[in-house]
Each structure stands twice: as structure tokens, then as C-alpha cells.
Image 1: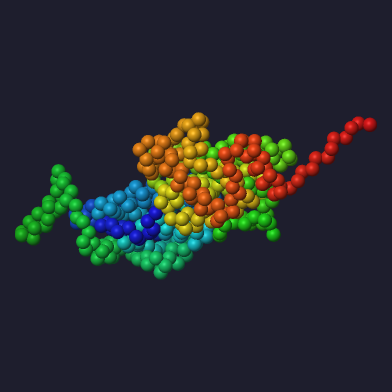
Image 2: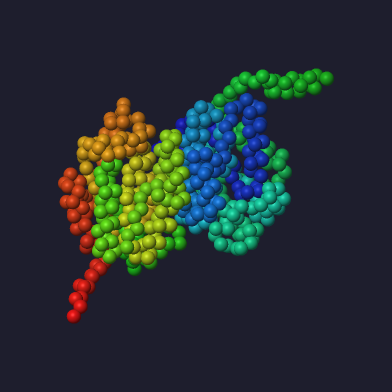
Length: 245
Length: 238
């Protein structure tokens, strides 16, 4: 096993973190659009997405079979599969890997569930150290407004209902995610997370992100992707014709 | 104060002091005769009045099936596989082993963390990392390590189940065919077990003797650890 950060790879790894409703996924997809328009090859990877572990996770959640330990270990298994398949190979190929949630999600959630912080940090030692990890900071109240307004329901585990904090889903979510935020805040210095104020406008946040990412791209590989229609040169041509007129 | 302890930080919300039963581990590589001896041991224990729970790898309700399915596809990376096994183990520890120990059972487990650590290490995982991952395991009362040489193992495997992909460590590409790979892989595992023998105080039992002799030897190791169940002599009617 090559421990974290020891991998010398030509790619870059950008990570977004934050509680549900912080807007991190929106920001990451905007970042991806921009990077691609700049001619970089990107690869998107999401938390809890390994097909290998999916059925076990789904069944475990549906039947509420998880303890904090098995919840933690199964997510680590999922993450290991992602690392071995979707993170290390693209990084070696020089891609810019964009990860929606990373090890910090596990550190925050598992510890909020009572798992030992040192143990879970060791568990993820095989992870590649990101180039930059963004933490979208938001209050529980603000996140709640967004979730309840958007997606229909709050899930059992997302609300930390397994912790028996409250019988009421929204109240449980408030209490559990509050603890998760405390854990994230603790990690800012520990891992050098870049804090983005998630209450700012989408454009402000994106501009801030792009500014930080741009500084890390010196020497990163650009890939000439051949498309039937080359949107970049079309856009450039249209800009030039505008300027000319 | 109970006898039980965790290797490290342990499981959240479990006080090992409340656990009563006995935790007996039978370890050894593939083809050494573990399941035969676990079966014999179970029968012997029950005959002597002990309630037995037997368990083994990939038998967890949560992850057992998923793990087997994932292995069939032969696409598991080394770290992923190690952690999948760790999930399976944690589920069995929390849902089966600990409740049974709390109830005073003798828990008989066919393999424990040592096999899992050996496999992970042989697949290139860092030994310190693996030990850290399994820190939440309970220290057993005894680890019976059934030992055989690679030659003995190979002969037995041919006669029973035949060589299979994972027992031959084919994912590691150590040899041209199943046999070469089996020998190379099992030799590495044996070396790993030998290294752990002292670290974890294994009770080594040489399996080259007959099944009966081996089984008597195993029983004599266990005997002093068990709470005696003295059956009163059957009274004759006057």
C-alpha cells in the first residue's frame, strides 16, 4: 500500500466537502464545466458510488442493519474501490479528478456517530492526498431550508436517526448535522481545508474556487479532445466577431 | 473486571467487562483442516455441557453475500477486499460474537483477524495500517494455529476441493498456473502466520499427525480455559 500523498502523479485532485444542502455539488459541476472548456481532461467521482458495494449499502440502509462501525467500514470499502479504480488511474493518466465528498465526510460523520477519531483516520490512510479540499461552510438552519425546499425527504441515516437523538426527523437532522459541522470545523486546520462561505452567491463562490484551482494548474496536462463540433473555437470565434463589430 | 479486552480503542458502546463466555479462534491457511477440527471441537464442547456459537469468514448477514458476489467477479483491488472483509468481520463481531459472549457461550470462530491481516499484508498492505484497522477486535482467550507445510497443504487441496482462484492468490499473479501460484501464495501466508505466532501468542498445533491425535491435542489446550460442567452421576433407583 502506498500511503496517502506519496503518489507522484501528473493529475490533480480537487475535493468538495460540506453537509447536505451546502451547494458543494453545484459548485463542483460548475468547476468541471470551466476546466473542460479550458481544455483539461476531468474525471468525476462521487461518494458512495462503487457498484461493488452498492447492493450491500442499499440493503443495509433499507433494513437498518448498520452499527457505527459497520457503517464506517463499508463506506471505507466503497472508497477503497473508488480509489483503486476511479482516482489513482485517472490521476496517473494526468486527469483532473473531481471528488464530491472525500475522506473528510467519513471523519465528520463517523466521529459524530461515536467512532474513535484516530481509528477512522488510520482507516483511510490509503487515500491520495488532495491538491485542494474545499469545505462549503453553512449553518444547519440554512441547509435545512435548501433541502426541504428542494429534494423531497431527509433520509434516515442522513438525519442520524440511528443515533436516537430525536424521534422527529427534522430535529434529529438538526442535532446530528450540527455535530457533523463541529467535526468539519475541527478539520479546517488539521487538513488545511479551504473554507468557502456557502451563503454567498453561487457566482461569488465559483469565482473564488476557480481562482484557487487556477493557481495549482501550472504544468497540468491539457488534453485535446476531438469533438464533432468544437465548442471552444466556436465560442472564441463568436467573441472575436463581437469585438470586431 | 472481566477477562476481555480490545486490541486498541475498541467498539463504541461496548464494555468488554460485561462479557462472560470464551472466545476460541481456530486459525490456519487453506486446506489445513480447520473446518474438520472446528466441527469436532463443537461436538466435544457440547458433549461437555458448553453452549457453542460457531462462526467464520463471510458469514455476516450484512456483507457476507455481497463479498462473495464481489469475489466472483475477480475485480477486487487489494485494499478494497481487505476492507470488505473487515466490514464482514465487524458485523459478525457486533451482531453475533459479542451477544453470544455476553450470554456466556463458547464462541468458536473458524479464522479471525489474523487470516485477514495476513492476506492483506501479502497483498501489499502496510502491516501497521492493517493492525490499526483491526484494533476494534476482541482479544481471544486462545488462538489455535493449525500448521502444515505448503507441500502438505497442496496434497490435501488436490484431494478435497481442488485449487481455486482466491486460495491460489491468482489475483497476485505469482505463478504460471494454479499450482505454482498456490505454492507461492500459501508460502507467503505461512511466513506471515509464523511472524504473528509470537506477536499474538498462537498455540501451534502440527497437523501432520492423525486427525484424532490433532483433535486431542486441541482439546487439551482448551480444557483448562473452560468452566467445568460436572455432571452428577446418574442415581440408581433404590
